[in-house]
Image 1 (cartoon, helix red, strand yellow):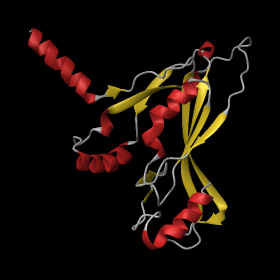
Image 2 (cartoon, rainbow, N blue to C red; image 1 turned 30 degrees about the vertical axis):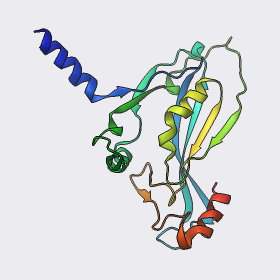
Image 3 (cartoon, rainbow, N blue to C red; image 1 turned 90 degrees about the vertical axis):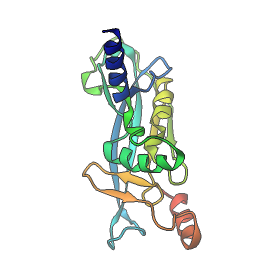
Length: 196
C-alpha cells in the first residue's frame, strides 16, 4: 500500500514542476501582449508592407496588502514549449521537459482596492533576450526582479528569436540564415539597433 502511495505521488509530481516562489516582498502580475507599429514596415516579413509586430510581457509588482489571488500557468505556452523542447533534445533534455514547468502569478483582476495602501513608484527596466532566445525563457528572472519592486518589460525580436508565438495563434520563426550571421548580418544589426 505504501508503494502505491509513493508511486501516486511520483506521477503527480512528474506532471508539473512549480518554479519556486519569487524572492521579493511583492506578488507579481504578468500580462503578455502583442504590439504593432504601423509606422514601420517589417523588412523580414514574407508579405510586402507588413507592419512591424512583436510580443512583449509586463511583470508588475503588486503589494501583498491587495490580497490578490494567485493562479498557476505553464512557464511557456504549449506551442512554444514544443518548439523549444525539440531544441532541448539536442542538449540531452527529455522530450516535454520545458512543458512540465509552471509558475504562480497574482491575478490582477482579483486585487482588492485598499484606501490605506501606500502608492509606490517603481523603476522600469526593458529586458531584451540574447540572439535566438525568447523573452519567455527569462520569465522566472523577470518575475524575481518584479517581486523586488521593479516593473520589468520583456520583448521578443521576430525573425531573430527561434520562435515567437502570437495570441491569434500565428507565429514567426527565426530567419535562415539568422539575422546576426552571413548576408543578413548588417540588416539584422539595423533591426537590433532600433528594435522597438
